[in-house]
Image 1: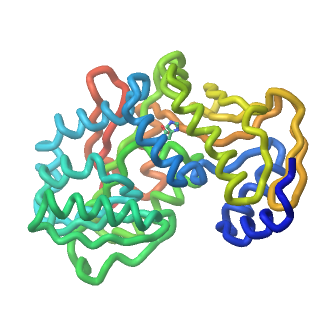
Image 2: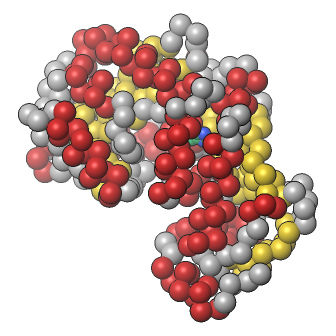
Length: 319
Ligand code: AVI
């Protein structure tokens, strides 16, 4: 059933116009696709934190162990006294490991979510009372000015989690170039990149037995309903994770289980049974692909560390 017009109007008015535009354009496109960045409302961020602790989701724990194992090697190359600039810092869960290792002169977490940024900065300030922390609430995908307090200081960018993998190559290259512009001449970048591996391991990581990833994917539809005055029946869709070998990526989709019609912000859509809405790409890299991507983004690789099982890599690069 459609929402009352008054409800729809109120919800539409309060919604982020970029969210509204992406959803309406994405549902009208063929194939239908909505950018993955809209997963992360409060509930979506909570579900993602749960995903990082799932037994099947190897990236977070593998990257953390690798960072801990290579901390002193990283510190040797980076040297002390750089400003650590973390892109999309979120809960800053891996940050203490790096801050302990590289003895930075300051820490600049950048995140689009103000509340998240304030909470994680406060927690880090308690753990590192002598470290100057300058949070920046901003969209890190565009070049931005760092706080005046860190002007002229050498920088180390930190971009863990293989978040780069959520972008197709052209957007990933743009982001790497934008990071180089933000960090400036002589900067270094420490970046996590997930590796290609057997398909069954990948599918398990993106379609876990407890259904947390399914809830994360379906939460996008719940968010559309709440924020855009929509009436999408959630039970008409199921979570699908599939491997796209040509593109070397896991894709997440929401597949219609039956023919379904609904309205979003007053516009009507009809989706046939079996049709999907593509909601996320998570690219997995081979040894050369990682370096090529960084090179295209203006970065020269100085070091490339991989865990013993070959699941995940951390690369250090210089601009
Ligand atoms: C944030 N990003 C790196 C995660 C990934 O693995 O691509 C998002 C995610 N999607 C499903 N599970 C985790």
